[in-house]
Image 1 (tube, protein in one colour):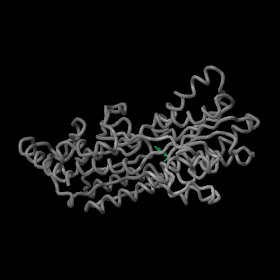
Image 2 (tube, helix red, strand yellow):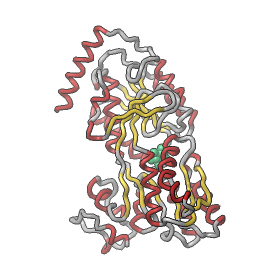
Image 3 (tube, rainbow, N blue to C red):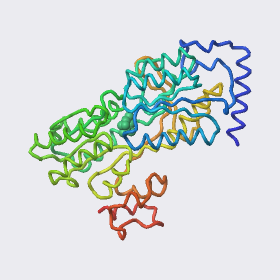
Image 4 (tube, protein in one colour):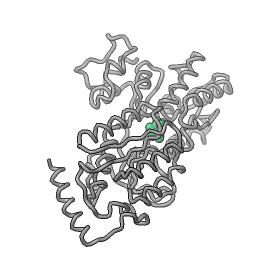
Length: 385
Ligand code: BGC
């Protein structure tokens, strides 16, 4: 209710502005937040939000597609979602199509941080603002970015592994080089690892990128690392749960799963299961619901012509800051992440956020070792032990 009233007030303010400020809706050269819209306001039922999703390989993107769909349905507007199936050119042409169909705003989860730049230009030529979703779009006049703190993701990941194995031989699996997040994650990991590397406590046996976050690449890099070190490996730094799963497979083939600490991110179901089974040390939980809600609220505010779209995003979901994409400081909304291991998985993933059910996470653990329904204090550690 409160939101609705605030929106009405903002709409009135935006209408007042539109009578004095005559901005061309085709103007693409403005400062952040000034492109498109033309000062016009629209009823939410008349807007169309275009969403371009690069891939559905990882579990999270499927959940987020569903969240976008539901948000549109529940708020009574059209959410036009296109999925590029890992094909950069298809993503670009799907965005062109969305723009030709007259979307009011474009949300883009890009496959390639650089190649997506022209999407922003085309959108601006059509008077449409672009929100980068989760992944930054580099070297472009991007309007907004809604994301998690990927540097922190990397720090948390590496901390899991060095806490469990402060010395020894490491395999370091980085994410997709074409995804800016992978670089931030790697920087965060390096921030934790470098002192150990400098002191000689940790030796990186192999350090490899996994194009497209491909688990098959992670599998072969891990196999290579294991054979280079004659299986004498004390830690694996993986950058997400998909690649961690592949690395655990390679470890399992050598009888090492569960003895070598390894991390990931996303709290994929399979990773959560590995955590309680003891073959993955931890994951970084990125709460998808607030990220998605923030992107949707921002998109609606832009599409309806709110005078200050950023203020329409529920501030309890995260924080605004600016992040530089090599062209400009982009207004960016960041949602916090959490470290998850066997000690808090039940409390946070199963009970607090109901991200996965206890039945799903503990599916491979004898039921008499499951944490009890009334225990929300992290009893999972005993089940996983
Ligand atoms: C996301 C991760 C995801 C990875 C692969 C990254 O950009 O931030 O959550 O695991 O892409 O899809």
